[in-house]
Length: 208
Image 1 (cartoon, rainbow, N blue to C red):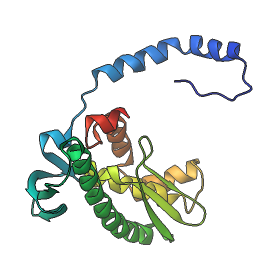
Image 2: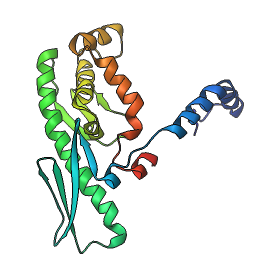
Image 3: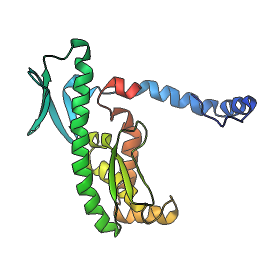
Image 4: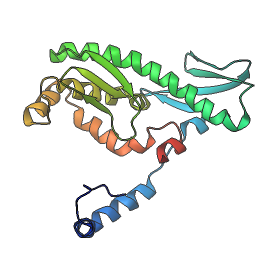
C-alpha cells in the first residue's frame, strides 16, 4: 500500500516505486520469513521478560486473576461459542492495559527524576507500529504491547519519550541525553526492530 499526497501525479508515484523496487522486494521477502508467535494459542503470555501460563476455565461470569506466574481467565458459559475467542482476547488485553498503566506510571516517575523533567499525564495506547509519543504539554503515550517485550526494552521507550521533554526533536543533543541516561538504548531499538512482529497476542492481531 502506497500513501502519497492527493495532488502528486501518478507518474511520480510510479517513478518512486520503480526506484525503490529492490528495497521493497527485499522487505517483502523478509516479511514472509518472519516467525509470528500466537501467544494466546500457545497459552504462554510474555510479561516484561517473564512468562505467564494462561489457564482458561468456564464459569458463571468472566474475570481475570493473576496468581503468581498463572493468569486465570474465567469465561462465562453464557458467551456464544463463536464469540469465545474474541472475548478471551478482550479480557487478556484489558489485563495487559491495566498492568501497563501501573508499570508505566512507576517507571515514568523513576526516570523523570533521573532526567530532571516532569510528565503531566500517562496515556496507554494500542498502536500497531508505534511505541510511544510525548507532546510539549508533558502528555506521554505508551503502547501497552511493550509489556510483551523484556522490561529493559520497555524502559528504553519510557526514557526516549521523557527525553523529548528536554528536546522536542531527534537532534544530536536529544540522542546524547538518551545515551547518557540509558546506555543500552541501541540494543533496545534493535530488539524492537527484530521482534516487533512478535509483540502481538495473536496472529490475527498482527495481520490486521
